Length: 232
Image 1: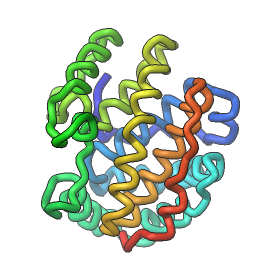
Image 2: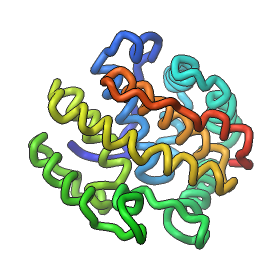
Image 3: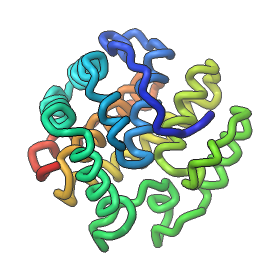
Image 4: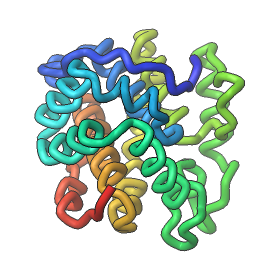
């Protein structure tokens, strides 16, 4: 497994979640992994604004019951030069996730949401190291994030799904459903970025559907947060 910003490989999502198509679910998890690993550069913006990818976004938003998300993502990716989008997303990502916005900064590591104090490298980190070993995969050398970073957890979910490893897929879904809602709420509350607010709202809806289909029903209450976001 390599967590990178390589070009996405979309598949129209219609029916994927309802039918329980594991290949399609892995594609979706990989797409989210790339979006949260780091800000899209100009090349990644071009890949994500292709006709096929925009159809992927619209179909996914509709299937997840969050059609308003595509009405933010698609114009944002389509209406500006890729280089301009790269600069905007880079600025927003640093503010949101790299700590430059002070108390508004949002951690993308599960350890920050486990126990008191928000410390990194806690139990979720060691648990994810064990899970990666069980999948017989490692993180690519260019990725410097800890094993419990959201991008790596999503990539691990995709890999477990592709391998048909139900004994690891179900715990990964349960793990993500325990803290993705908290990240989504935190991102939406900042008001710093419409783009990341809707990306995380979609992600939360995706995880909620997977949790429900795996027997861990969790109502998705974050869709209403779309009405309270700001401007990128």
